[in-house]
Length: 427
Image 1 (cartoon, rainbow, N blue to C red):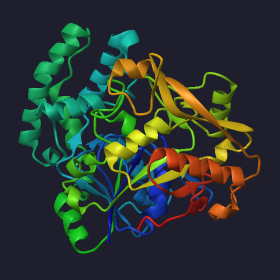
Image 2: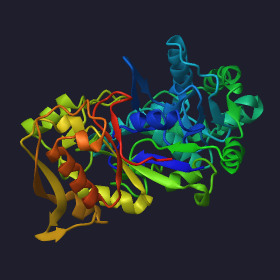
Image 3: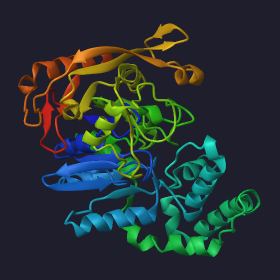
């Protein structure tokens, strides 16, 4: 039985929640392996819409065990609030498991995130201000606090004191902010211990045993390939590795146990926050995509920047992730355009470039080279098979598949759980 990675193949917001939820009824575990509550997934079940920020999408599938891996940074207040909100709506959250090695987002992380972003002014990155970056920085600097530390007050206090010795100097002397009291932070964090203790486990051991026993494990990435801290449009990226390699480091499951890697692609392109975006549309078409597609961030509430499909980015995602399949989402949003441009290459300094340039300078100056495909006007939301799509919609999907370098195995034709055309099975 397979272990699968499912991740974003653009700048995030591709519809990973829908894809994960679609598979959730067929898998035993769904695992978040990186990011924090800066990653929002929307899942529509019947007439119910769920916005998930930190929890794996599999929490909505009764037979599935949702897992938060060691590569995730956890804001305990956000996690408990999200669990409470789902429980109030009748969702069973008791099966959730959290790695004891996952790092915590503390109150001083969110404070530093917000003040440092304001301090940068025009040079700001466009973070969500939720403390994700500072928490990952502490992890790398070996002064982070992990979930397991909540259950040893002595260790917790030592770690908070060590962190605030430096951070309070920065807050006071650089940002002219009030110092944060150690006792206040320790007391707040200890207050989460009892409520979280029943969820904490050795998830690395659990997941490896599950795969060895033939159970199906789905690794769910947050954000997207172009936001990866190593492989994205640095510095306009997140602070973790949403690419496929992050599934291994973020869970402790080795790469030889992963069978398939599924990339989620929108039928057009969006991104949130600052940074280069070659196909961005600042005209009526961009506004139309934003309106029809409901392009507003699940977590941030910010309008997404919208543009035409970028095949250069898709090919790059195929390469760096080793993608075996694509799940194409939001094809229905393109209904009504007479002609649909697709970016097939870039022009950089007068030269045609068909692969993503490694140079940040080149990418900033990249101009899209478009091919235009015929559109369609027919409603596709009721289509159940590929053959039921209008001929021009079929040609659009086939063209994207050829340009992107991996087969398109599923197509989203509407927001609902059942509004999906399955071409090839992922399992």
